[in-house]
Each structure stands twice: as structure tokens, then as C-alpha cells.
Image 1: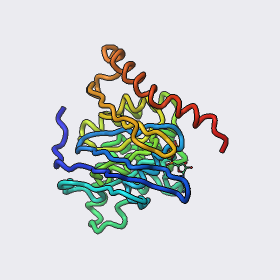
Image 2: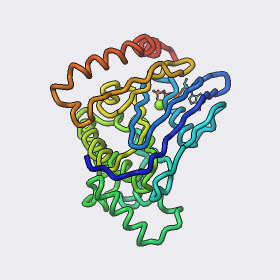
Image 3: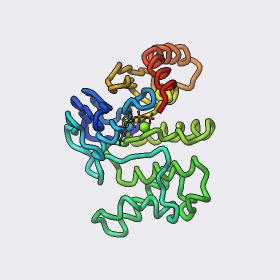
Image 4: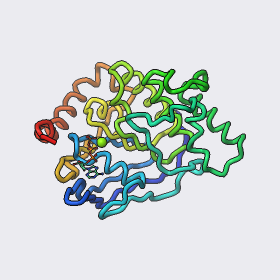
Length: 263
Ligand SMILES: Nc1ncnc2c1ncn2[C@@H]1O[C@H](COP(=O)(O)OP(=O)(O)OP(=O)(O)O)[C@@H](O)[C@H]1O
Ligand SMILES: [Mg+2]
């Protein structure tokens, strides 16, 4: 696959712990994400997935440990980390173009360069003809494409995705997984992909990090050695089923406990 050559940086998460008051959400989490790699983080509800993503993106200061990037970041990257959210987080009064422009507004680029970057992000996500549409005129899938375009417009070093498909129906999810796959292959995207959906993780990630809960710790990191483009082919089914069983074995009991908890 002819991806864009990106510098060989590495995201390093080292010994990260986090407590909300008396609740220890995360304990001693360490892992690395290489440039061009997608790592999925799975685990039952409340195991600290969103907290971990927030810490990586700098929204939450960890109680202990550190997050850093080793090596040179891509030169055209305006923000090292950018989020894609489950609920899209679009401004309802802004059209697609203006929503995608949002992260560029506080950057010192000239207007032409900003327009060019927005045009490019719209083209890369197949949104050019929807540039003037308001969020309320778009389907859920299209709204999330806008969320993705808005993330890509800054050419982030690492894309941080928190359940990006969880608000969408099954078919739309499949279509967007195809879109992600194409974009990631073309741009050699580096990302952390949080999901509670095992099948999504198995389809999208190079490696899957399974967290356990109370406190959230790394249970296991499993590599998926089948190329992303091959995974929906029948030949991959048996191998993927075995990986699924292995990962599900790790989270089954915890998911059951989370399910039975009274909040
Ligand atoms: N702002 C907060 N204040 C106090 N406790 C919090 C806060 N945010 C999260 N928590 C608690 O920390 C733990 C981890 O929460 P987090 O949202 O990171 O989990 P999650 O894995 O993303 O869950 P979900 O699958 O439901 O999205 C949970 O027990 C949660 O109740
Ligand atoms: Mg969450």
C-alpha cells in the first residue's frame, strides 16, 4: 500500500495512574503506539478507557506517570493529538465547512492556507458536496464524517478516537469502518481507538489492549497480524474468531460484573 511517509515517532504511555477522589480509575498503564499503528483499547464500561484517552490528549492530568512522544512529529501537523468523539460534538449552527474550519481558527495560518486545508480535509472524507450542509441536515454517519474531517484538518500526529461509531446503526458503522480503513491506509494514520465493541477492535486495530476494571489495568495486549484489508474476507474468519475468543475470555467476567452493577 502506498501510504504517505511519516516520521518515525512513537507515543509512549508510561506508568499512568489516575484517581478521581477515592476512585482509582487507572493503575500503572504502560504501552507504546508506533507511527502508523492503530491500537484499540477495549474493556467493560467504567474501566477507564475515556480517562486514558483524555490523559493522552492532555485534557486530564494523570495522578502519576507520563505521556510523551519520542522522535520527530510530522512537520505539517498543527496539533499532535486530536479527538474524534462518539457524539460528533459538532456546532449545530455551523455548516460542514465551518465545523471543519473550527480547529484552524486559533492557528496563525493565512486565510488561503486555511481554506486549502479545509478543502483537502473535505475531499479526503468525501464531504466536498456537503460543505454547505448544517449538522441537522446530515445523517449520523455523515455527521461523524464531519467529525473525522475536523480531526484530520490539523493533520494530527495521533488520532484519539473515543467510541467513534457507537452512536451509529450497524450498517452505517460498517460503511464508516470502510472509510476509516481507506483513510488510514492512505495517510498511514497513527491512532488510539477506544471501543467496548470487540468486533470493531478486531476489524480496525493492529493491536488490542484489553483493560480490566477497578482499577483499570492492562490485562493483555494482543497483536492482530492479519492485514486490515483482509479481515472481512472469509479466509480470515477462523483466525479472527480465535482472537475474539481469547480477548472475550479476558473481559467476560468483568463485563458481567459491570453489567450487574447498580449505579
Ligand atoms: N469526572 C469524574 N469524576 C469522578 N469519577 C469519574 C469521572 N470520570 C470518570 N469517573 C469514574 O472513573 C471510572 C472510569 O471512567 P471512564 O469514563 O474513563 O470509563 P470508560 O471505560 O470510558 O467507561 P464507558 O465504557 O462507560 O465509556 C468510572 O468508575 C467512572 O465512574
Ligand atoms: Mg468512555
